[in-house]
Amino acid sequence: MTAPLPPDRRAACRSGDEPPKLRLAYLVSHPIQYQAPLLRRIAREPDIDLTVFFGSDLSVRGYKDQGFGVEVAWDIPLLEGYRSEWLKSWRDTGSISPGSPISRGIYRRLRQRDGRPAFDALWVHGYAGANSLQAILAANALDIPVLLRAESWLEDRVRSRWKLGLKRAFFHLLRPGIAAVLPIGTANQAYWTHYFGESFPQFRMPYAVDNQYFARLAQSSPTRQAELRSELGIPPGRPVILFASKLQARKHADHLLEAYRLLLGNPSSPSTSPPFEHPFLVIVGDGAERPRLEEMTRHLGLRDVRFAGFRNQSEMPAFFALASVFVLPSRHEPWGLIVNEAMAAGCPPIVSSDVGCHYDLISDGVEGWVFPVGDVAALSAALRRCFASPQAAHLMGRNAQQRIRSWSYEEDVRGLRQALACVTGWFRD
Image 1 (cartoon, helix red, strand yellow):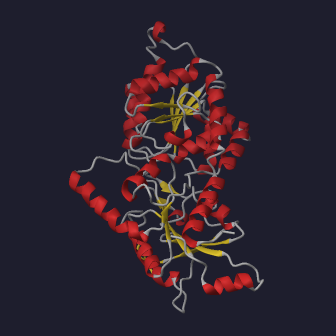
Image 2 (tube, rainbow, N blue to C red; image 1 turned 180 degrees about the vertical axis):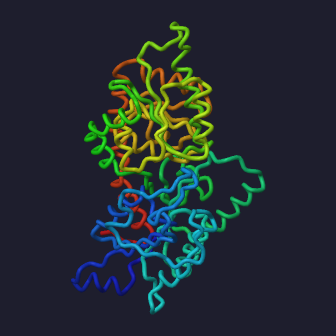
Image 3 (cartoon, rainbow, N blue to C red; image 1 turned 90 degrees about the horizontal axis):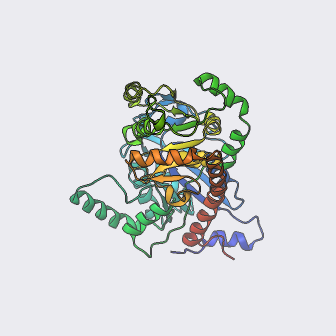
Protein backbone atom coordinates (compact mmCIF):
# COMPACT_ATOMS: atom_id res chain seq x y z
CA MET A 1 0.00 0.00 0.00
CA THR A 2 2.95 2.36 0.55
CA ALA A 3 4.54 3.71 -2.61
CA PRO A 4 8.03 5.28 -2.73
CA LEU A 5 8.56 8.82 -3.93
CA PRO A 6 9.00 9.04 -7.72
CA PRO A 7 12.69 9.26 -8.80
CA ASP A 8 12.44 12.84 -10.07
CA ARG A 9 11.00 14.00 -6.79
CA ARG A 10 13.55 12.09 -4.71
CA ALA A 11 16.23 13.89 -6.70
CA ALA A 12 14.63 17.23 -5.88
CA CYS A 13 14.78 16.35 -2.20
CA ARG A 14 18.52 15.47 -2.46
CA SER A 15 19.43 18.56 -4.48
CA GLY A 16 18.78 20.93 -1.62
CA ASP A 17 16.03 22.72 -3.51
CA GLU A 18 12.79 23.55 -1.77
CA PRO A 19 11.24 20.19 -0.79
CA PRO A 20 8.49 19.14 -3.18
CA LYS A 21 4.93 19.12 -1.92
CA LEU A 22 2.57 16.20 -2.06
CA ARG A 23 0.19 16.89 -4.92
CA LEU A 24 -3.33 16.07 -3.70
CA ALA A 25 -6.38 16.15 -5.95
CA TYR A 26 -9.81 16.28 -4.36
CA LEU A 27 -12.94 15.49 -6.38
CA VAL A 28 -16.37 16.54 -5.10
CA SER A 29 -19.69 17.17 -6.80
CA HIS A 30 -19.98 20.90 -5.97
CA PRO A 31 -18.79 23.50 -3.44
CA ILE A 32 -20.25 22.52 -0.05
CA GLN A 33 -20.64 25.07 2.74
CA TYR A 34 -19.43 22.64 5.41
CA GLN A 35 -16.31 21.69 3.47
CA ALA A 36 -15.01 25.11 2.42
CA PRO A 37 -13.35 25.92 5.79
CA LEU A 38 -11.78 22.44 5.87
CA LEU A 39 -10.34 22.88 2.38
CA ARG A 40 -8.88 26.24 3.39
CA ARG A 41 -7.31 24.55 6.41
CA ILE A 42 -5.76 21.76 4.32
CA ALA A 43 -4.44 24.30 1.81
CA ARG A 44 -2.45 25.92 4.62
CA GLU A 45 -0.41 22.73 5.16
CA PRO A 46 3.11 23.67 3.97
CA ASP A 47 3.81 20.30 2.36
CA ILE A 48 0.45 19.62 0.66
CA ASP A 49 -0.39 21.11 -2.73
CA LEU A 50 -4.19 20.82 -2.89
CA THR A 51 -6.29 21.15 -6.03
CA VAL A 52 -10.07 20.75 -5.75
CA PHE A 53 -12.11 19.62 -8.76
CA PHE A 54 -15.82 20.45 -8.87
CA GLY A 55 -18.34 18.85 -11.19
CA SER A 56 -20.99 21.56 -10.79
CA ASP A 57 -21.21 25.19 -9.72
CA LEU A 58 -24.83 24.93 -8.55
CA SER A 59 -24.14 26.06 -4.97
CA VAL A 60 -22.33 29.24 -6.01
CA ARG A 61 -24.68 30.32 -8.78
CA GLY A 62 -27.76 29.87 -6.57
CA TYR A 63 -30.19 27.02 -6.91
CA LYS A 64 -33.48 25.63 -5.67
CA ASP A 65 -32.62 23.14 -2.96
CA GLN A 66 -34.94 20.13 -3.29
CA GLY A 67 -34.99 19.63 0.48
CA PHE A 68 -35.57 23.24 1.53
CA GLY A 69 -37.85 23.89 -1.44
CA VAL A 70 -36.52 27.45 -1.81
CA GLU A 71 -33.83 29.27 -3.74
CA VAL A 72 -30.54 28.97 -1.85
CA ALA A 73 -27.46 31.18 -2.16
CA TRP A 74 -24.98 30.58 0.65
CA ASP A 75 -23.72 33.68 2.43
CA ILE A 76 -20.29 32.32 3.33
CA PRO A 77 -17.26 32.15 0.97
CA LEU A 78 -17.24 28.76 -0.74
CA LEU A 79 -14.21 29.15 -3.04
CA GLU A 80 -11.74 31.33 -1.15
CA GLY A 81 -8.47 30.17 0.35
CA TYR A 82 -7.70 27.13 -1.82
CA ARG A 83 -7.13 26.33 -5.48
CA SER A 84 -10.07 24.88 -7.39
CA GLU A 85 -11.07 24.06 -10.95
CA TRP A 86 -14.39 23.45 -12.68
CA LEU A 87 -14.49 20.27 -14.72
CA LYS A 88 -16.12 20.55 -18.12
CA SER A 89 -19.68 19.28 -18.06
CA TRP A 90 -21.38 16.56 -20.01
CA ARG A 91 -24.48 16.65 -17.84
CA ASP A 92 -25.54 18.96 -15.01
CA THR A 93 -29.21 18.99 -14.03
CA GLY A 94 -28.73 21.53 -11.25
CA SER A 95 -29.15 18.84 -8.60
CA ILE A 96 -26.94 16.12 -7.15
CA SER A 97 -27.70 12.51 -8.08
CA PRO A 98 -25.82 9.43 -9.31
CA GLY A 99 -26.27 10.75 -12.85
CA SER A 100 -25.53 14.44 -12.22
CA PRO A 101 -23.11 16.04 -12.55
CA ILE A 102 -21.19 14.05 -15.15
CA SER A 103 -17.97 15.74 -16.20
CA ARG A 104 -15.40 15.13 -18.92
CA GLY A 105 -11.65 15.39 -18.92
CA ILE A 106 -11.01 13.88 -15.49
CA TYR A 107 -8.43 11.43 -16.83
CA ARG A 108 -6.61 14.14 -18.79
CA ARG A 109 -6.53 16.40 -15.75
CA LEU A 110 -5.01 13.70 -13.54
CA ARG A 111 -2.28 13.02 -16.14
CA GLN A 112 0.68 15.17 -17.16
CA ARG A 113 1.50 15.72 -20.83
CA ASP A 114 4.29 13.16 -20.67
CA GLY A 115 1.82 10.56 -19.43
CA ARG A 116 2.99 10.53 -15.82
CA PRO A 117 0.53 11.18 -12.97
CA ALA A 118 -0.07 14.87 -12.25
CA PHE A 119 -0.95 14.05 -8.64
CA ASP A 120 0.40 11.83 -5.89
CA ALA A 121 -3.02 10.96 -4.49
CA LEU A 122 -6.71 11.43 -5.26
CA TRP A 123 -9.29 11.98 -2.54
CA VAL A 124 -12.90 11.37 -3.63
CA HIS A 125 -16.05 12.37 -1.77
CA GLY A 126 -18.71 9.70 -2.31
CA TYR A 127 -18.74 6.59 -4.46
CA ALA A 128 -22.21 6.39 -6.02
CA GLY A 129 -21.94 9.21 -8.56
CA ALA A 130 -20.72 8.83 -12.13
CA ASN A 131 -17.99 11.43 -11.56
CA SER A 132 -16.62 9.61 -8.54
CA LEU A 133 -16.49 6.29 -10.34
CA GLN A 134 -14.81 7.62 -13.47
CA ALA A 135 -12.26 9.50 -11.34
CA ILE A 136 -11.46 6.33 -9.39
CA LEU A 137 -11.01 4.40 -12.64
CA ALA A 138 -8.82 7.16 -14.09
CA ALA A 139 -6.63 7.26 -10.99
CA ASN A 140 -6.30 3.47 -11.01
CA ALA A 141 -5.16 3.59 -14.65
CA LEU A 142 -2.50 6.15 -13.68
CA ASP A 143 -1.42 4.30 -10.51
CA ILE A 144 -2.61 7.18 -8.33
CA PRO A 145 -3.77 5.91 -4.91
CA VAL A 146 -7.37 6.77 -4.08
CA LEU A 147 -8.73 7.84 -0.69
CA LEU A 148 -12.50 7.52 -0.28
CA ARG A 149 -14.71 9.47 2.11
CA ALA A 150 -18.50 9.16 2.41
CA GLU A 151 -21.12 9.34 5.15
CA SER A 152 -22.83 5.96 4.61
CA TRP A 153 -23.80 3.74 7.53
CA LEU A 154 -25.41 0.34 8.06
CA GLU A 155 -28.63 1.69 9.60
CA ASP A 156 -29.84 2.26 6.09
CA ARG A 157 -33.24 2.32 4.48
CA VAL A 158 -34.81 -1.12 4.13
CA ARG A 159 -33.55 -2.87 1.01
CA SER A 160 -34.50 -6.20 -0.54
CA ARG A 161 -32.14 -9.14 -0.38
CA TRP A 162 -31.24 -8.89 -4.05
CA LYS A 163 -30.41 -5.17 -3.75
CA LEU A 164 -28.15 -5.90 -0.80
CA GLY A 165 -26.52 -8.62 -2.90
CA LEU A 166 -25.90 -6.15 -5.69
CA LYS A 167 -24.41 -3.71 -3.19
CA ARG A 168 -21.99 -6.35 -1.90
CA ALA A 169 -21.00 -7.18 -5.47
CA PHE A 170 -20.42 -3.49 -6.19
CA PHE A 171 -18.12 -3.09 -3.20
CA HIS A 172 -16.30 -6.30 -4.10
CA LEU A 173 -15.45 -4.68 -7.44
CA LEU A 174 -14.71 -1.26 -5.93
CA ARG A 175 -12.44 -2.44 -3.12
CA PRO A 176 -9.28 -3.08 -5.23
CA GLY A 177 -9.47 0.48 -6.59
CA ILE A 178 -9.40 2.15 -3.17
CA ALA A 179 -6.17 2.51 -1.21
CA ALA A 180 -7.80 3.61 2.08
CA VAL A 181 -11.04 5.01 3.43
CA LEU A 182 -11.58 8.07 5.63
CA PRO A 183 -14.43 7.28 8.06
CA ILE A 184 -16.32 10.29 9.41
CA GLY A 185 -17.23 8.58 12.68
CA THR A 186 -18.01 5.31 14.45
CA ALA A 187 -21.07 4.34 12.39
CA ASN A 188 -19.30 5.05 9.11
CA GLN A 189 -16.27 3.08 10.27
CA ALA A 190 -18.49 0.06 10.93
CA TYR A 191 -19.91 0.44 7.41
CA TRP A 192 -16.48 0.24 5.78
CA THR A 193 -15.47 -2.68 7.99
CA HIS A 194 -18.64 -4.51 6.96
CA TYR A 195 -18.07 -4.08 3.23
CA PHE A 196 -14.27 -3.88 2.93
CA GLY A 197 -13.17 -6.09 5.83
CA GLU A 198 -11.39 -5.72 9.16
CA SER A 199 -7.93 -5.36 7.65
CA PHE A 200 -8.75 -2.61 5.16
CA PRO A 201 -6.85 0.66 5.90
CA GLN A 202 -9.04 3.23 7.65
CA PHE A 203 -7.99 6.68 8.87
CA ARG A 204 -10.60 8.65 10.74
CA MET A 205 -11.36 12.05 9.24
CA PRO A 206 -14.34 13.16 11.32
CA TYR A 207 -17.30 15.12 10.05
CA ALA A 208 -16.64 18.52 11.56
CA VAL A 209 -17.69 22.14 11.22
CA ASP A 210 -15.88 25.40 11.90
CA ASN A 211 -16.31 25.23 15.68
CA GLN A 212 -14.68 28.60 16.34
CA TYR A 213 -16.97 30.33 13.83
CA PHE A 214 -20.16 29.15 15.54
CA ALA A 215 -18.81 29.68 19.06
CA ARG A 216 -17.65 33.20 18.26
CA LEU A 217 -20.85 34.35 16.57
CA ALA A 218 -23.07 32.76 19.21
CA GLN A 219 -21.15 34.56 21.94
CA SER A 220 -21.32 37.90 20.16
CA SER A 221 -25.04 37.86 19.29
CA PRO A 222 -26.98 39.35 22.28
CA THR A 223 -28.29 42.18 20.10
CA ARG A 224 -29.31 39.76 17.38
CA GLN A 225 -31.04 37.55 19.98
CA ALA A 226 -33.13 40.52 21.10
CA GLU A 227 -33.98 41.23 17.45
CA LEU A 228 -34.97 37.60 16.90
CA ARG A 229 -37.22 37.63 19.97
CA SER A 230 -38.91 40.77 18.67
CA GLU A 231 -39.21 39.35 15.14
CA LEU A 232 -40.69 36.05 16.38
CA GLY A 233 -42.84 37.54 19.12
CA ILE A 234 -41.07 35.76 21.99
CA PRO A 235 -41.01 37.69 25.28
CA PRO A 236 -37.62 38.28 26.93
CA GLY A 237 -36.50 35.50 29.20
CA ARG A 238 -38.87 32.83 27.84
CA PRO A 239 -37.03 29.56 27.08
CA VAL A 240 -36.82 28.34 23.48
CA ILE A 241 -36.73 24.88 21.89
CA LEU A 242 -35.09 24.97 18.45
CA PHE A 243 -35.51 22.75 15.42
CA ALA A 244 -33.47 23.63 12.31
CA SER A 245 -33.34 21.47 9.20
CA LYS A 246 -35.03 20.81 5.91
CA LEU A 247 -38.76 20.29 6.42
CA GLN A 248 -38.86 16.79 4.98
CA ALA A 249 -40.88 13.84 6.26
CA ARG A 250 -37.81 11.96 7.48
CA LYS A 251 -36.70 14.90 9.65
CA HIS A 252 -39.85 14.37 11.76
CA ALA A 253 -40.58 17.85 12.98
CA ASP A 254 -44.08 16.38 13.45
CA HIS A 255 -42.73 14.17 16.25
CA LEU A 256 -41.33 17.28 17.91
CA LEU A 257 -44.70 19.03 17.69
CA GLU A 258 -46.39 16.04 19.33
CA ALA A 259 -43.71 15.87 22.04
CA TYR A 260 -44.03 19.61 22.63
CA ARG A 261 -47.78 19.19 23.11
CA LEU A 262 -47.14 16.47 25.71
CA LEU A 263 -44.59 18.69 27.44
CA LEU A 264 -47.05 21.55 27.85
CA GLY A 265 -49.74 19.31 29.31
CA ASN A 266 -53.42 20.21 29.24
CA PRO A 267 -53.92 24.00 29.52
CA SER A 268 -57.37 23.44 31.05
CA SER A 269 -55.94 21.19 33.76
CA PRO A 270 -53.22 22.98 35.81
CA SER A 271 -52.21 19.72 37.49
CA THR A 272 -50.86 18.44 34.16
CA SER A 273 -48.81 21.55 33.39
CA PRO A 274 -45.03 21.30 33.79
CA PRO A 275 -43.36 22.93 36.82
CA PHE A 276 -41.41 25.38 34.65
CA GLU A 277 -42.12 28.32 32.40
CA HIS A 278 -43.59 27.20 29.10
CA PRO A 279 -40.96 27.29 26.33
CA PHE A 280 -41.55 28.51 22.81
CA LEU A 281 -40.81 26.17 19.89
CA VAL A 282 -38.97 27.74 16.93
CA ILE A 283 -38.82 25.79 13.66
CA VAL A 284 -36.13 27.04 11.27
CA GLY A 285 -36.18 25.70 7.72
CA ASP A 286 -38.45 25.22 4.78
CA GLY A 287 -39.61 22.38 2.57
CA ALA A 288 -42.52 20.28 1.37
CA GLU A 289 -43.67 19.43 4.91
CA ARG A 290 -44.18 23.02 6.02
CA PRO A 291 -47.92 23.33 5.15
CA ARG A 292 -48.70 20.06 6.95
CA LEU A 293 -46.68 21.09 9.99
CA GLU A 294 -48.40 24.48 10.16
CA GLU A 295 -51.80 22.79 9.93
CA MET A 296 -50.77 20.30 12.63
CA THR A 297 -49.74 23.21 14.85
CA ARG A 298 -53.18 24.79 14.46
CA HIS A 299 -54.94 21.45 15.03
CA LEU A 300 -53.02 20.84 18.28
CA GLY A 301 -53.76 24.37 19.47
CA LEU A 302 -50.07 25.24 19.89
CA ARG A 303 -49.93 29.04 20.13
CA ASP A 304 -46.24 29.33 20.99
CA VAL A 305 -44.78 27.72 17.85
CA ARG A 306 -42.92 29.96 15.42
CA PHE A 307 -41.97 29.06 11.84
CA ALA A 308 -38.89 31.10 10.94
CA GLY A 309 -38.37 29.83 7.37
CA PHE A 310 -35.02 29.15 5.71
CA ARG A 311 -32.08 30.94 7.33
CA ASN A 312 -28.58 31.13 5.95
CA GLN A 313 -25.58 29.72 7.76
CA SER A 314 -24.36 33.03 9.16
CA GLU A 315 -27.76 33.52 10.85
CA MET A 316 -27.76 30.19 12.69
CA PRO A 317 -25.40 31.05 15.61
CA ALA A 318 -27.89 33.63 16.88
CA PHE A 319 -30.67 31.02 16.83
CA PHE A 320 -28.47 28.56 18.75
CA ALA A 321 -27.66 31.27 21.29
CA LEU A 322 -31.37 32.04 21.65
CA ALA A 323 -32.30 28.40 22.30
CA SER A 324 -32.15 26.41 25.52
CA VAL A 325 -31.98 23.16 23.56
CA PHE A 326 -31.72 22.00 19.94
CA VAL A 327 -33.78 19.00 18.76
CA LEU A 328 -33.22 16.75 15.72
CA PRO A 329 -35.74 13.85 15.71
CA SER A 330 -34.78 12.50 12.26
CA ARG A 331 -35.10 9.01 10.93
CA HIS A 332 -32.17 7.88 8.77
CA GLU A 333 -29.71 10.69 9.43
CA PRO A 334 -26.23 9.22 8.78
CA TRP A 335 -24.54 12.10 10.61
CA GLY A 336 -26.32 15.45 11.17
CA LEU A 337 -23.77 18.29 10.95
CA ILE A 338 -26.34 20.73 12.32
CA VAL A 339 -25.74 19.01 15.68
CA ASN A 340 -22.04 19.92 15.48
CA GLU A 341 -23.05 23.54 14.88
CA ALA A 342 -25.41 23.62 17.86
CA MET A 343 -22.82 22.07 20.18
CA ALA A 344 -20.10 24.47 19.01
CA ALA A 345 -22.46 27.34 19.88
CA GLY A 346 -23.02 25.89 23.36
CA CYS A 347 -26.57 24.65 22.70
CA PRO A 348 -27.21 21.11 24.02
CA PRO A 349 -28.81 18.69 21.54
CA ILE A 350 -31.62 16.17 21.83
CA VAL A 351 -31.38 13.70 18.96
CA SER A 352 -33.04 10.47 17.92
CA SER A 353 -31.13 7.20 17.91
CA ASP A 354 -31.18 7.40 14.11
CA VAL A 355 -28.91 10.47 14.07
CA GLY A 356 -25.51 8.92 13.45
CA CYS A 357 -23.39 11.55 15.18
CA HIS A 358 -24.72 10.56 18.60
CA TYR A 359 -22.31 7.59 18.76
CA ASP A 360 -19.37 9.99 18.81
CA LEU A 361 -20.67 13.28 20.19
CA ILE A 362 -23.39 12.66 22.77
CA SER A 363 -23.35 10.66 25.97
CA ASP A 364 -26.98 10.62 27.09
CA GLY A 365 -27.41 13.01 29.99
CA VAL A 366 -23.93 14.55 29.60
CA GLU A 367 -23.69 16.62 26.39
CA GLY A 368 -27.37 16.16 25.56
CA TRP A 369 -29.96 13.43 25.29
CA VAL A 370 -30.65 10.55 22.90
CA PHE A 371 -34.14 9.04 22.54
CA PRO A 372 -35.39 6.02 20.53
CA VAL A 373 -36.35 7.19 17.05
CA GLY A 374 -40.08 7.62 16.67
CA ASP A 375 -40.76 7.50 20.43
CA VAL A 376 -42.66 10.74 21.01
CA ALA A 377 -43.14 10.10 24.72
CA ALA A 378 -39.38 9.59 25.18
CA LEU A 379 -38.67 12.82 23.29
CA SER A 380 -41.11 14.69 25.52
CA ALA A 381 -39.44 13.17 28.60
CA ALA A 382 -36.04 14.36 27.35
CA LEU A 383 -37.43 17.87 26.93
CA ARG A 384 -38.86 17.71 30.43
CA ARG A 385 -35.46 16.72 31.84
CA CYS A 386 -33.90 19.62 29.98
CA PHE A 387 -36.17 22.14 31.70
CA ALA A 388 -36.48 20.36 35.06
CA SER A 389 -33.65 22.40 36.56
CA PRO A 390 -32.69 25.99 35.74
CA GLN A 391 -29.09 24.83 35.33
CA ALA A 392 -29.66 21.57 33.43
CA ALA A 393 -29.58 22.92 29.89
CA HIS A 394 -26.80 25.40 30.68
CA LEU A 395 -24.56 22.65 32.08
CA MET A 396 -25.29 20.38 29.13
CA GLY A 397 -24.45 23.22 26.74
CA ARG A 398 -21.06 23.71 28.39
CA ASN A 399 -20.38 19.98 28.18
CA ALA A 400 -21.44 19.95 24.52
CA GLN A 401 -19.13 22.82 23.63
CA GLN A 402 -16.24 21.17 25.44
CA ARG A 403 -16.86 17.85 23.68
CA ILE A 404 -17.03 19.30 20.18
CA ARG A 405 -13.68 21.06 20.54
CA SER A 406 -11.92 17.73 20.03
CA TRP A 407 -14.02 17.00 16.92
CA SER A 408 -12.51 19.56 14.60
CA TYR A 409 -10.67 20.28 11.37
CA GLU A 410 -7.38 19.64 13.16
CA GLU A 411 -8.41 16.00 13.61
CA ASP A 412 -9.38 15.96 9.93
CA VAL A 413 -5.94 17.15 8.84
CA ARG A 414 -4.26 14.65 11.12
CA GLY A 415 -6.28 11.75 9.72
CA LEU A 416 -5.73 12.87 6.13
CA ARG A 417 -1.96 13.11 6.64
CA GLN A 418 -1.87 9.63 8.20
CA ALA A 419 -3.77 8.24 5.22
CA LEU A 420 -1.48 9.98 2.73
CA ALA A 421 1.58 8.70 4.57
CA CYS A 422 0.21 5.19 4.31
CA VAL A 423 -0.66 5.19 0.62
CA THR A 424 2.12 7.40 -0.81
CA GLY A 425 5.11 7.18 1.53
CA TRP A 426 5.13 10.95 2.16
CA PHE A 427 5.55 12.63 5.55
CA ARG A 428 7.93 9.92 6.73
CA ASP A 429 11.36 10.47 8.22
